[in-house]
Image (cartoon, rainbow, N blue to C red):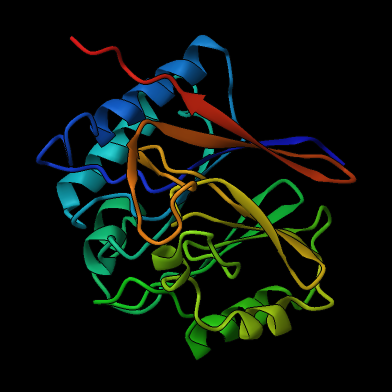
Length: 259
């Protein structure tokens, strides 16, 4: 089995308005992340973009994101998987990132890198912030997993099935994790990969590990559990898929010095 290197960008929140709050500049953080990968010579096989890619679902931000990935020497040669989150809008997402016509149905995909299968699921509920896997998405997943992949499967979605310690975020998790657990039971799923919480966390769904990536745009303060407290800064995830295990490592972005 080959080694696969994946980089996960989650909750990028690109915005035409620039800073979302004082010291919180998602566009600058994305640029910083790409420069870091370039300077360190990291050339991922796959880039997972796990939702909330544009803060308001605007097509211009999606196009800017795709252009940045294609222009970067680090990511230009990678297989890129775009997954929607609750801030995204399916119509403009499809048009700008997938090159499809507009449509409002769930965006579900199967992407391969050699023998590694990536099943990307749409867990969004239009107009809401929590997650749900619709019957058609669960059917898509069941069909995709019907036969095993040579190097196993990664299931990728925005909303985690595992809770966050931050109570308001835990309320916005995937609301039908049991359906997901039943769909992947007995299949060759190696890891479930998510975003949404803006902090790193690891959990499990049955016997399958669950990884929750931090955000490149800004972070959630996990020392505070009764409210979501924003922390300037950002991070991404490095995923090393080995023959016997999947290793997730947080890569922290240095905060830009104050002028």
